Amino acid sequence: MEDNGIVQEVLAGSQSAFRTIVERYQDRVYGTCLNILHDREDAEDVAQEVFMEVYGSLRSFRGEAKLSTWIYRIAVTKSLDLIRRRKRKKRFAQVQSLFADHTEEPAEDATRAHPGIRLEEKERGEILLRHIDRLPENQRAALLLFSADGLSYQEISEVLSTTVPAVESLIFRARSTLKKRLYRFYREHC
Amino acid sequence: MASLTPHEEEASRTLDVLGRLGGVGAPEDFADAVMRRLPPGGIPDRGGAARGAALVIIALAVLAVLNALTIVGASSRNVASAGDAAVDSLAVEYDLAPRSLRTWE
Image 1: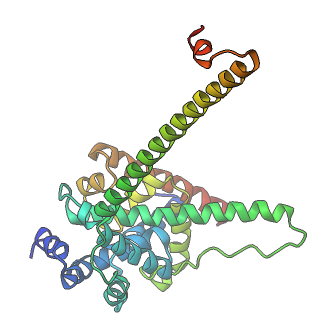
Image 2: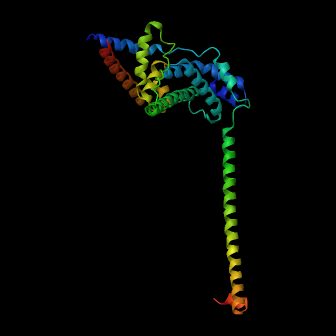
Image 3: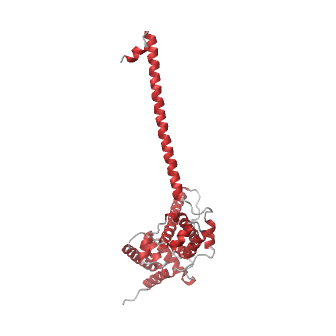
């Protein structure tokens, strides 16, 4: 059944129709969250939040964009929101530690437990993810949606509410920045 | 074609990992977990709630205006009765009819 038909059924009160939406999109949503957050538990929590938001806001979904685009947009926004909240918390903790009498061990970064990275590529994968995290948000999102999630430029432009040339430019800049930084990293560390 | 330096080659191989990040599926019980979290009453009618909130705000604003008008009315009545009392006391003091004082302006 088409997405729009299922949406109408959900709006009519069918929870089993909503289950169809969850099952249809869960892998893509979880994958997108995981690629941005790199942590399985965080990705699962945020992906669940995405579907809760989809359920709660379905009445406001007008069908102008595809359901998949709308869901991807929520997934990207919620994942980036979590990163922003974490950064704010970290900065606050750093400021607090300046005034604290005792010195606490700094919290470890989230475990790099991306299951898509094979064991033999673990170190390389960690280096890559660390460098991806330093890219500007829109470049990071565009690059991951294209390279990891396999979305087209057109689809990414709809998810990020921008134009196709802007997406091309974001991905090009992200890749060239990553290449330069990785080159510099290996020159300094190898 | 110029060959890559070892560092460029490392950077390029690391970038290749990007293409292998996809294809990770959600945990097995993911859909069950989502369905358990759904509100029991179905999709919340956020539009209805917003309309309700707007109506309450309008009602409160109307009440506030009416209240303000009542206060203004009461205070003008108070001023008027205070004026009458002053006229009466002047009339007593100077032995005049209050009416003549009220018309004498």
